[in-house]
Length: 328
Image 1 (cartoon, helix red, strand yellow):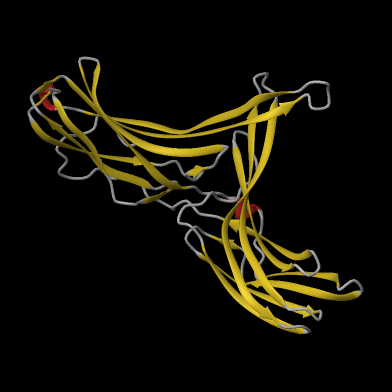
Image 2: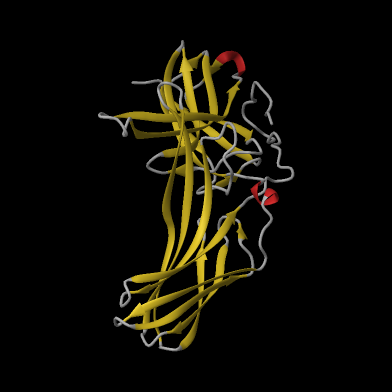
């Protein structure tokens, strides 16, 4: 029977940590028997990785796939707890810890090409052997100065007008307008926008689709250290308005998108980054009777500011003290 019965990490449930804020928690270690010369520690780790296959030599008689990849280390901090008299008795022992996240971090992110992840890992060692460990993944909301470098458009208005043909010789126009009070948002916020559709045809319009797209640019390297980039787009949110827009009439539609609590912030590709994200709201009027569609595209900025000051303070009444101070 192992001397360690259980090791666990105690954290607030479903917590989202903002870059630059403080993570506080406890390591709970339960022993079946006395443990001499233990090493009990907790680590905070943040990493990113991207990988995809790319065809080379496509213009030649032969081609082959190469793997492009890249990685980044965002944070790695360790707290080792001091143990009085270098032994722990059977039973449960609680260790309080705290970490300051760096003020500039990318958000937790997952796709088929890349991911950014953060985790806490508690471990207990005895006589140079790992007796137990526990890993818990964290939701981290990143921050960015993108909105300061790209002034917001408040309010914002986008219009698209298109001539369409139908019934062989009939023609008309469809005008699609999207209005919103602002185009800069934070994760968890609501995007409220008004769409106006002017149908100057003799046909009904039945389907209008709104979608929020994420465009992610990934940066990687081939085995020969040649730089490569790839852009991948995905649909983050989608709504379909089933309506009857009558001929030669104008209809208004008010729509709301509820943003997820954690999102990659809008960013430009800079040195050292492995990926950057851009967002776009697209309204589409489908015209099956003319085999075409009308689209209006609105740039959306997702941002989040680091807290002014959220340094960790040692909690009073800790059972055991840490061997190193909290680092910024």
